[in-house]
Image (cartoon, rainbow, N blue to C red; front, side, top):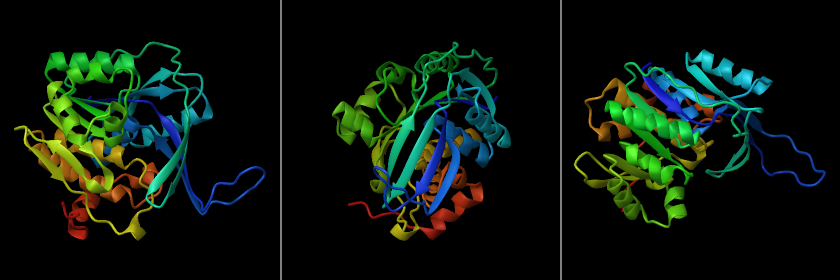
Length: 299
C-alpha cells in the first residue's frame, strides 16, 4: 500500500442544461456524464490516474450503483476497503457560468465498523473528514508512525477541530473560513496553531493563500483560463488534492511549492471537462498546462 485515502463515495450525475424544469415541465439536457464522486474518493482516482495507486476506505452498498462504483475503482487498480451502507449515495450536479448547483442524496448510516488495515510501508494518508471515526483513528496512527497526514477541509465537520491536531498538510476551502467566521489569514493562523506544517486556503479564481515549510505566507495565483473553456468546476478541488498527493508521493524531497504548482496544473486541466472521470489528468496533461495558460495577476 503506497497511500491510504478515506472519504465518502458518490455516483455523480453531471448534466448541462439551460434551466431546471419546474412543476410538470420537462427538458432535455445538452450533455451529461456519470462518474465517481466524493472529495477524498475523487482525489484517490486522480492520484491513481497520475501513477501512484492508493487504497481507499469508503462507503459502499450492495446495489447496482455500488457495483458500478467498484467497477470504476477496479478500472484504475484501486483497492477499495468498503464500509457498508444500505444505499449508495448520489450527487446531481448542474454546472453553469463557472458555478455549480448540487443536490445530494446521502446514506451515512454505517452498518459495520470501519476496517482496520495493516499499514505496512504506507507513506501517506489523505482525508476529507467523512467517516469521522475512521479518519481520526488513522490520523492518530499515521502520526505515531511519523508519516504524512493530509486534510481536504472543504467544510466544517463534527471532527474538524480534533482531527487537525494530527494533520501535517491542511488545504481548506473558503467555505470553511465562512463557517468558522475567519478571514483567510486568520484561518492560516488557526491552522498553524493546530500544528499544521503546511496549510492553504483555496479561493477559486483568486488562487490559494498558503504558508510554506518556513511559515512564509504567499499566494499561489490561479491560471488564467478563458471563460469559454470552463466547462465544469465541480471536483476541481478534489483533483487539486489528489495531484499534490501524487506529487508528494513521487517526489517526497521536493518543496511544497512544487507540489502545489503541479496540483494547480491538474485542477486547471479539470475545469475544462464534464464529469470527474473526464477531468482526470495524465502527467503530460499537467505539464502542458503551464505552457498554455499564464498566472492571473495578483493585486
